[in-house]
Length: 313
Image 1 (cartoon, one colour):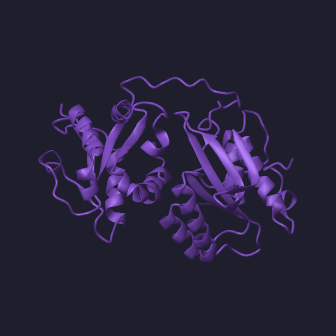
Image 2 (cartoon, helix red, strand yellow; image 1 turned 45 degrees about the vertical axis):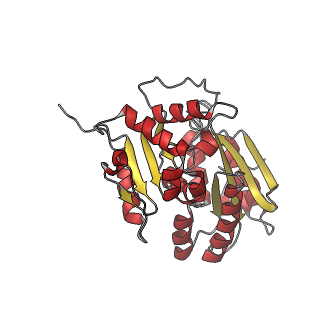
Image 3 (cartoon, helix red, strand yellow; image 1 turned 60 degrees about the vertical axis):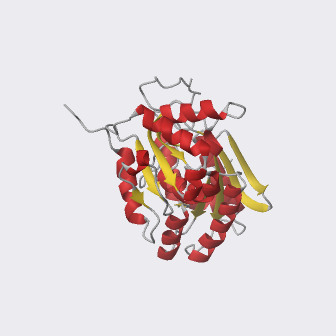
């Protein structure tokens, strides 16, 4: 088996690109991925490497990886094409994230497009740094750590620093499990799944989304209650669809019940489409995502989710 700590030339210098795929797969195995497969067909699309990681909350994080063993940088056309596949697979709930690994880097246009699509771009140095970061103490990998990597670490993948399986314990009731829970109408699921969720998780936030994180077979009401209670913030995606949904209304009332005076800033309204807001929501300052510029409200949202309640003392 090829090791990610071998030299680049030894590890994946071939004409077919298959060695790079094997090299990428082995890197994910070394950080504790519970499942790694090559040349997987998902939703009628061929995926170079398919990875399943386990998050701290024992949630499954599924990754589709495109490996490009080219001598030149990967351009925007490759990113656009892969983004279309990722959107299709996310829509079919087959993956949670798309990653492109390039042996020769990426063009500026490709990086810009990937940010818009919520696709992660990695180079071999990033994967090497990931393996170094999780290497057991005393192991000599002979690799100098590269730039910080967003890929989940070994501890995040369900193992301790020595590579042994961790025993997961539910967080105490006063320690939220998630940074945010997204409350939305299922008619607006595409925006939440394809735009909002990837951008929040790309920034390292732990997010609860019903279609992925609710327990199969559990009553919806109890799962909604659990999500609100275990999240520091609840994000309300406001549209006419949301206001017409009884379940969405129930979630917003649950969240407001935990912080009726909004002192802890637990509820953050996101206005996705213009609509007439009820008084309980109208009294809160919302972030406007209905306009063409969504980057500014996104940065404000990230700051708000990371913030702690004001000190009233």
